[in-house]
Image (cartoon, rainbow, N blue to C red; front, side, top):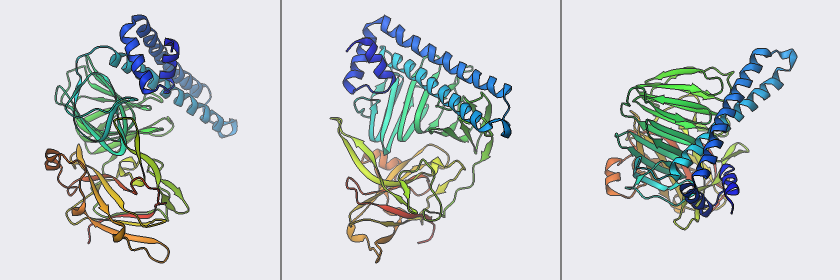
Amino acid sequence: MNDDLLIQKYLDGSLSHEENQLLSQRLREDPAMRDQLRSIAEHAVAFGDMARMLRATEAESNPVNPSSGGSSRSARFSSWLALAASVALLAASAWFFLQSASPQAPVLTLVESTGTVSWAHGEPIQPGGSLPAGTLETVGEDSSALLQFQDGTLITLHGETELSFSEENQKILSLTRGTLSAEVKPQRNGHPMLIRTPSAVAEVVGTVFDLSARSEDTLLKVDEGLVKLKRLADGSQIEVSANRSAVASLDANTSLDMASTPEPLTDWTFDFTKKAPPRDWRGIARDGVMNASPYVARKLPDGRIITHHGVSVRTSMLEKPLRLLATESSVIRYRLRLDKPTSLQLMLLTNQPEGGFGGNFECKISENDLRPDAEGWCDIAIPIRRYAPVNSHPHIRKQHPTAAGNIITSAIVNTFGADRKLAVARFELSSRP
């Protein structure tokens, strides 16, 4: 395969694992090829800036007016914003690939993980190894990865997340999708850590926070310190302080404001029969229930994938801040239905109340424990003490022994590998037995 085709397939995301390795080797061997990819990245940056300038110019010269086609201009604005965001990610992707393809000193260490962690489009990675600049992905809804920079800064990836990272004069990260929690040590003056997403840039000097990158916006929740959030759509900025959150959207017409992080709730219900779930929850909303959808649970060393069918309630993806606190007396309740009895896996993904990863926990339900009514619906109630750590390593279980005392960021129910037409009508966190 010639070099131009390799680069083209890399840019459109269609490289196979073998082709990805070949491109890395060719970039190490050929300075001219590295210059070609670097030039693409530079042009992408310039093109993204031009897209944002054109959008701003059109907005000034054509103020929105209901009688003059405001809706069509709004659509053009959205197109420019999406274009600017996509080329920004293209540029970041090219830069990170160049850095990962060149021999470099280790940047961080994969301290611990659950599920599958791998180089993007590559082989799985085991905890304990030092990693150079590059791109990691956690594969599967219940996957996580704890990463540590040499200065002690901790980054935890949650669920299906892709993160690129490098460190020369400063830490530069690119969160393409998914969620991370960070405990950032004080950075050198003038060299803050930068985290880029498709819609925003977060500038961090030293703090504790959570950041989620979605297709249309970026969610930031700060637990300690201060984070500067810049919206790429129009360049507007806001400083988000402790116990505050903000959403940076691709739509520059929305306000960029802080919201107070509410006190944790120990009782909360979501009834799928009465309201539609947020777009980022796992499952297919149809006929007043949430139907299970397939997802990659983990990837095997030989490249094969294990698929589960499930529904997730992702409280970390709610635009209005919400914190669900699990206590010693907490009970998780579901109202669900299956086409035939089968075992279930229930999971809780958690953070610590003060920020940072709190551990992943699971409870397995035998088909004999299900008692469907005449219409096939089952009501199950699982005390929090029945949830055990997913990670089997003793030191991890000692560090995160229970979900009690943690903030629930996602609750998952699935049928392992079999599709049993799982449907969920109701989820509840209760402080009462």
